[in-house]
Amino acid sequence: MVSTRFLIVLSVALAVGLTFGCAGGGSQEGGGSGAAVSHADHEVAPGELDDYYGFFSGGHSGEVRVLGIPSMRVLKRIPVWNIDPGSGWGITNESRALLGGMQTGDTHHVHGSYEDGTYDGKWLFVNDKLNNRMARIRVDLMEVDAVVNVPHAQGAHGLFPQRYPSTEWVVLNSEFRTPLSNDGRGDMLDASTYGGVHTIINAADMEIVAQVTTPVNLDLAATDYQGKYSFATSYNSEGGATISEMLASDRDYLVVFNWEAIKEALANNNYRIVDDIKILDGTEGTGLTAYIPIPKNPHGVNISPDGNYAVACGKVSPTVSIIDINKLDDLFAGNIEPRDAVVGEPEVGLGPLHTTFDGRGNAYTSLFIDSQEVKWNIQKAIDLYSNPVEGETAVVDRLDIHYQVGHTMASMAETKEADGKYLISLNKISKDRFLNVGPLKPENDQLIDISNDEMILLKDEPAYIEPHDCIIVRRDLIEPHVVHRAVLEEHPLAVTQSSVERVGNKVTARITASAPVYGLQEVVVNQGDEVTFIVTNTDEIPDLAHGFAISNYNVSFVVGPFQTKSVTITADKPGMYWIYCTNFCHALHLEMRMRFVVNPRST
Ligand code: CUK
Ligand code: CUA
Ligand code: CA
Image 1 (tube, rainbow, N blue to C red):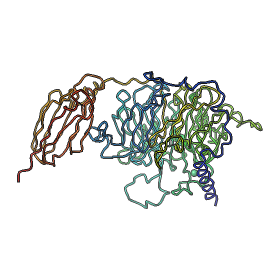
Image 2 (image 1 turned 30 degrees about the vertical axis):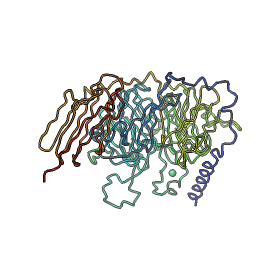
Image 3 (image 1 turned 90 degrees about the vertical axis):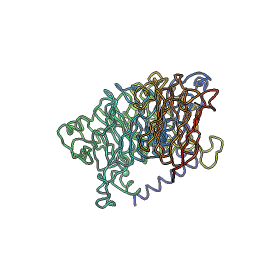
Image 4 (image 1 turned 180 degrees about the vertical axis):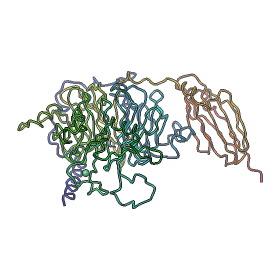
């Protein structure tokens, strides 16, 4: 059986790759050898600042990480789908309202909002593959400010914001096919009824604009540089439910979504409504989509910074497919066949997953099985496709990485301002590269200099489970606030005067925090009362944060200057409990505490 044979080939290749790090790649061409660039050129000395922000997804840790590039210093962890007692995320009323009771999530892709093809520094968008949501992070505060739940989707995976003229829409793919109305009716094991959804979300109000359904699954996502098309790779054109079924065909699809046609269908009420969401039929022939056959179980799709090409990685095929975006108008007009849009398909190595760009015409593809970064020239690949020359290849350089690379990203590469300075290889396995910390090792994010012809490995950086992707953003495009003043102005509960108010069995304690005292010395309630604590940090000194932790009541959060947070608990344990500041704020920080007294229920 063909499918079984492919499975065996794939699993043998994976096993070899996992054992030896570099399996089929052969010798290392160049990389790290003779080039006259000193590592010191890329050092960031103590007290010096990095040139770039790196925003990394955190995988099933549920968070987003902010790194300085090239130092690779971890500057901040932004909690998103996780619980973080360090800040109180998932503990405060404000964050719990956004998380809707969920405690976990799986962030694979983080991308910034755009203005005219480059970052506008306003928002970051993050997917949750686990509970099918998307979060928005305010870049000025580096905190989540909105969440949208996405029904009809499972494996909410590939995410990409509109790049031109600016980010009005964000698209989110469902990697897993499911019944559309997944309410338990019908034969739930009949996979032929399943579909994927390309969800369009309005970036400003975080509402779902529409969902375009497809018979196939939709994995990674991209948008073009003209505001006309979005893209999804599909590895399950077979409509299979098992791994061998999903590997049956030699080709699957790059699915193209036509935004003009989608807008027209919406304007003409050419949709169904399911659970209050507009559902558009994206089957082949509706004019909303085009299905371009490409080999085989493809994974990443990335757009070259000049806007001309979509590059889809073959994963199970050693090829990448180059799709000419300028031919898509003709494809939708019916003037050409889908495969006519493919203008190159170079062999690059085993297990190609993702591609990034240097803005000088070169692409860099991650090879999971070969454990390599491969640099290849786009124009050369296109020329050789139409006019093959014996012994010629588009490959320019290869660099062994350590080991098993997933995503790879170059500086500013997802913008028209790609500058080709740094490349990050997000490797799944570090094996022997760091001190042994037991059976579960860190991952290894490697920093590579790509400013020369040859790639030069600069740095290994251990990473906690499990960044999938990152973007590298020039620092002048990011301008965070110094204090939370904007939040104080926006928060309806901000406290200026401390007080305690009781209505029935509901108690509200409004408390200011100003080093080294809280605005109240005690709060006295009765057992069984529902108590809401609202805390505003009224200190004006940047970064002077106060904690608010209630002993034995499982409450701990932090409020930054001008920030307000609240928590609601049931006073179910009688006794006296110290509330204390967790964040070292003052010489008298240890004295910054107050009492919470719960009188026993009179029987
Ligand atoms: S996916 Cu993980 S390596 Cu979720 Cu972007 Cu390719
Ligand atoms: Cu306030 Cu420590
Ligand atoms: Ca397939």
